[in-house]
Amino acid sequence: MSVNGIQDGPVTVTEPHKGGGAHEMTARGSSLSLPRFMRLKFTPESLEKVYQTYFLRQRQETLLVLIVFAALFNSYVIIMCSVVYSQDKLNTLAVAAGGLASDILLYIMSRFRFLPEAVSRSLVPYVLWLLITVHVLCYFSLNFAGFYEAGDTVGWQTFFIFSFFLTLPLPLAPIALLSALSCCAHTLLLGFTVAQRHQDKLQLTVLIRQLVANLMLYFAAVLVGVMSYFMADRKYRTAFLEAKQSLEVSLTLKEQGQQQEELLLSILPKHIADEMLQGMKKEANQKSDAQQFNTMYMYRHENVSILFADIVGFTQLSSAVTPKELVKLLNELFARFDKLAAQHHQLRIKILGDCYYCICGLPDYREDHAACSIMMGLSMVEAISLGSGEPDCPAGTFAAGYTMDAWERWRVVCLAALSVEDIEDIYLFGTMITGLLLIGLGFALVYREIRKTVTAVQNLTRLPVMIEAVGRAVSTETGTINRSMDNIMEKLTALQRQMDRFGDQNGLRK
Image (cartoon, rainbow, N blue to C red; front, side, top):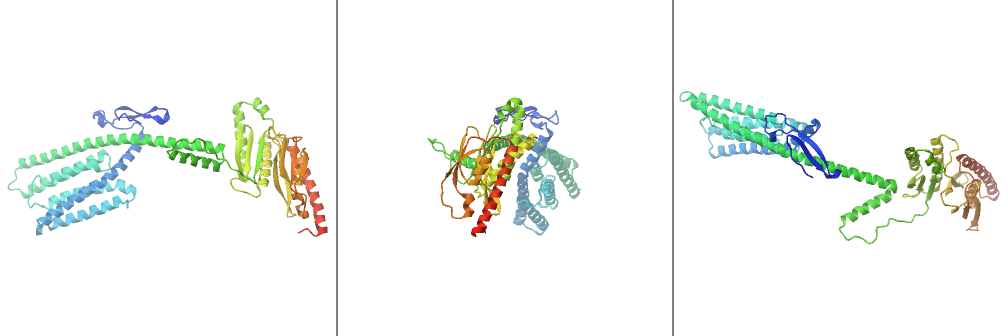
């Protein structure tokens, strides 16, 4: 990062985070008659306003230094009065003690921010200027030395004028005006007091020469103060540009980090992505030799349901529309799927072309993971139908099994992905009712019973079997699926009636 300076013309700031490009800021002067180093003003007014706020806040800390100067002045007066104390110095001592107390109070309120920020920035500088001016004038008018001279307190006045330009958090014009008022008040009071006390011995020309000499000192202090102010302003402007560029780099890096994290979350589940990010940060912090193998984020999970969705006819669709329209269509469709996934407690695993994979039961286990998955599948079919405006829009095939729970309600317990590319045989653990549903959808099934004993009739619908689904569904249209589901529900209702009668006859019904 480099700043080539501030001058009457463009200031080029190199920004390496944007490919080494250059960002130009122009600083132009408000008056061409001033020297070049004094003509400092950023051309964008908004940038200049931001800088002025930055400048005044930086100078707010130097205000405490001026308060310390005022307190040291009053301490000096108190010490001198105490060393050569007499009755006529009592008023001077009292005024100095009051001034010191006010300085300490103002310092505490400014240092620990007891005052509102608006008051501290707009009122405190003027109050401090008034206190210092009153301190100096009181010290002179109370006649600490016992006699009046035309050069009394000129040194203190000159010192404080120069300090105003270095410490007051105000623009240059108000500081110059306050300094001029302070000098005029001191000169008029000094000239009037000396003229009144030395009327018989006073030589007017001597007094005028002394006052002119005082004004020359004040002018020199103002001139040096203005130069110091401009030099400090130049320094602050350079620091402002560097701070601005550093902040831009920081914000850019933060934004890029957020984009990378969003990209990672769009590919991986959040709990895995968070673990990977923590692992990468940990590896970056550890200054060790490179590992031979990368960290594997692989775990075994049981009792979960996985849903695979594939859009039928996607290849033909991709050749019939433009790439832009195709991407827009997929984006809208998968956005609907993501909303449905949140409603049905699904965790999206992957998006690959027109395939949508999600899982239920991770990262938090759910007993009804199969029910949530089948409802997700049906909702996806409905979302595709609504999106296309056709009642029988081709879509991926979804199948599920139903079971009776406590003889009173149906519950989904198993999900089969029936239309995934390159899969002809599907093996799953399910129930007999799951098999009925698969038969209704056009599958040829082979039952392999793995438990031969049934202890009670209420367990009949939960008899564990291995179901081998051979081939594919006869139709992948949503209308056919819905009709098959209605047919299976009728069969299940009839089966429950038979089981109810059987349970009543054998005393097994709850």
